[in-house]
View (cartoon, rainbow, N blue to C red):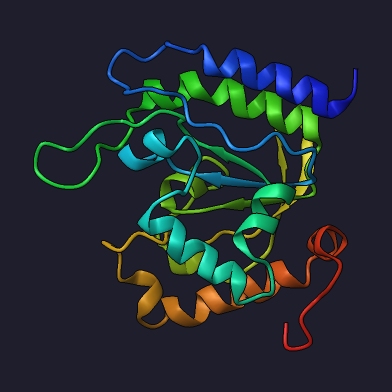
Length: 208
């Protein structure tokens, strides 16, 4: 069985998951892509469930504008990068504001799906988006300590590079003011010149 066929089988099993009673379905899954790049989001919002794909609403527009800036449009990205998340279902709304943050048990239950994907795809580059996603990969106190740098780690037994991005949420100002603004651009430059990114998309920007 090919890696792609195994990934599709994995996603079929993932789509049936109902392990977390407080999570709101459906399970949001990206395209099945046999890729050496994994993007790790936090958790889908309400609109992602309706659209049936990750980063399908406002935050996604900002995220794909970032990638457009290094020469890769949304369609090309979705077709070439495996899009995963810390949790694959909508956590629901927070009683006071925004979306609820998944609790530790929900994160742990969902981690088995990501572990399987990492071991199956053997990625060379992991792009965690947002502090919750980054925290599953490495210790993070402040975003400025990890964004704008490339990190070499072992993750689920796989040696890979990690280039974190801030979350593109409209509620966050971090990526729009300094030092976040410059650190975001440096992170994108690192992504654009990473060998596996260049292999995937066939080019590296001259200014990267």
